[in-house]
Length: 392
Image 1 (cartoon, rainbow, N blue to C red):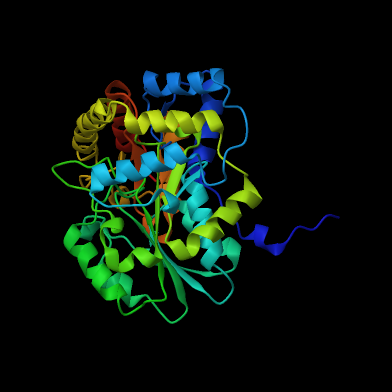
Image 2 (tube, rainbow, N blue to C red):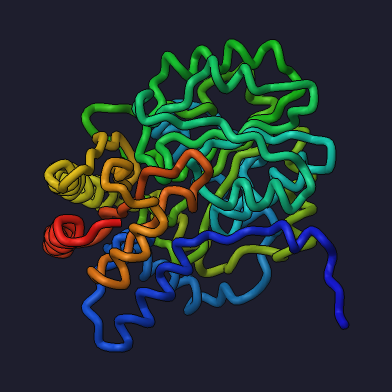
């Protein structure tokens, strides 16, 4: 009998893909399914980006590229960061990766080992905990609380750091909650990290261009006092509707960059050549497509929040970023995962149960409003009818 290493017994899942598979299977049976589960823009990739990839293929960009990414793209990322955030980054600190998860994978592998502790947001993106457990490190959840606007608390986060803490993972704007942490709270966190100089920080800012109600994204890159231990995670998937292109980038402190490059060489060699030229076109081309998409998400956000707050025994805080709502369903009498399953099987609405994002996710479900307003309204109507007629 074949025996794989014990670490694979600890690796988890991203249940949004399991829900997507089940929703697809039900649709194949002829069921009318509305998918509010998957975190994927329903917009096509803008045409000028697609054309750049086609041109790259026609121009002969068919071979390997540097493991770190082509220089024009790394320069483009550095210029884009300076344009958006006013922060200077060297192209030699930028690593092009095949999707945002790769940056998580690298950072957690660098700092995760038995005896180490890694702090991560809970509820949060499920791959954080999965990869921490895979390395044998101890996952330490940082509670993300509804009463705090789904922002992290600097005081609570700092209180969880111990001599064994090696890495702190942050995420704002956040998945699954849509929370955006205010600058004052980030200021307090960075000030407190001065007492913990051996703790690295990975800041997941993949939704950084999706904020609402006048909220501005505050990047951890803007804090020079932690730049020597900060890993930035970002990419094209959400901002430019490029989820299937598998395009991400990270910014690394100089002491860690070479280790990240070696991981790239050992795992995927390099990122798809033509996709990199498409990524450059996204950054250097017109940005009105981003603004238009975010404005549409904002319109849908208002529809979602208003509709959810009209459902029986459901309340929903207004998300300030990303494209997720995280309504509180604890008063319905349903456990969150059971409710999510029943909504899919009986009402034809795919959502994700809060516990799939961590132990602090019980009592909540996640809805993605990266779907049409028409479908969102139809889904809300089905959810209301279900909750009015079905008890837990």
